[in-house]
Every structure is written in C-alpha cells, then in structure tokens.
Image (tube, rainbow, N blue to C red; front, side, top):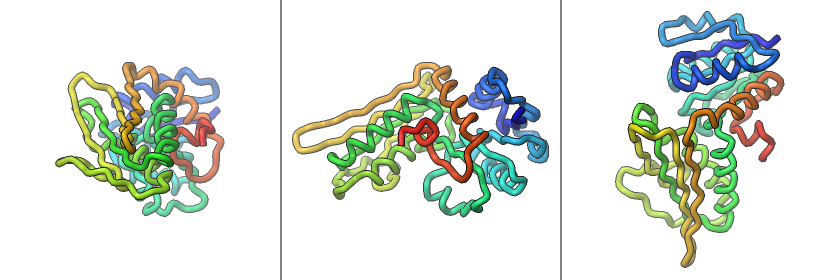
Length: 233
C-alpha cells in the first residue's frame, strides 16, 4: 500500500485528486493538508501530491525531497527555468505536471510538431477568474515546447499586455464561467494553422491524475509533463 499526502486538499483540484486517489487500488490517503496545516503532517506519506501556490509548492518540494518522499507537483509556476534553477539532487523523485488533461497534452505535442515548419506562433489562453497566475502553467509549457521545436527564427509581434514566454506571445483571459481553454495560432506564408483545446468538465482530468499518480509511485528522477507519463515523447 502506497500512502499519500495531498497538500492543497481542499481546493478545486485538490478535492478532485482526493476523490481519484480514494478510487485507486493500492493507495491510501493518510494526510489532507489545507492552508492552515503544518507541512510536518505530510511527513508520514510515501508520496506527496502538491496542488497549492508556487511559493508554498517550493517549501513542499524541498521538504519532501529532504525526507526522501516521492512528489507529484500539479501547482502552476514551475517553468523549465524554475525547475532548472531549483537544482534538485540526483536522488530526488519529482514529477511536475502542468496540466492533467490528456487532450491538452496531445494538443501541446501537436503544437510542437507544427512549430518545426511554421515558427510564427502565439497563444491565447482562458481560465476561471479565480486562477491567480497568468500565464497558466499549461500555456507556459506549450510555449516552451514550441520554442524547443522551432528550427527558424519567429517573427510574431506581441500585443500590448501579452506575456512573452520563450519568445512566444501569450494573451491571458480570465472569465467567471470558464474552466480552461487554449488556442495556438501559427501563421505562415498565406496560411494559418490553429490548434485548440477546451475543457468542458473537470472530470476530464481524472485519467491524467490517475496515470500521473501511478507513474510517480514507481519512477525515479525528475520528470516534466504528462506527455512523458503517457509515453507521447
């Protein structure tokens, strides 16, 4: 039996993760931490799942790695640069998941394929008005995947207010009735390619959450992205 601590257990994603873990054979939740909890409550678990804020997440990851615990991070803010700057030890077993949606993960992978041939790209992303970070972890991850795949220098002007991640302009929208939506637009010589994904129910995250938990329970080292978990790349 793998024991699990969920940090951020009372939030929207945390509540969903608790439900998924409780439905999985071989896993048992032994700690559910909220904003008032002391992080020491997570110490007795084999696997720590972090869905908090980035500043809290740093402390959670530090403590879990120091304890030799496995960590699944679903908190936004962990860009490639932030993970690299963390300089996690070789003994760390940490999995960073920007988005638990299988469909969104596939859309990001396809965006990287298009970027090889059409380098001019921009991202429009929409989330619920209560999402505190912008751009989202998903759009940041997509921008980094596009930048890594491009063979040519892009020529994509930014709009006022855009965020620039890895050279990719991102426009962030926050609306009261939204869950998650991302539209990647590539412009070429007389043609446009668009790759869109919309989350219409949070239940769509369940399969990705379960896959990430199983992966984190057995993998070694540092892994970034649900695409790695699913074997897409």
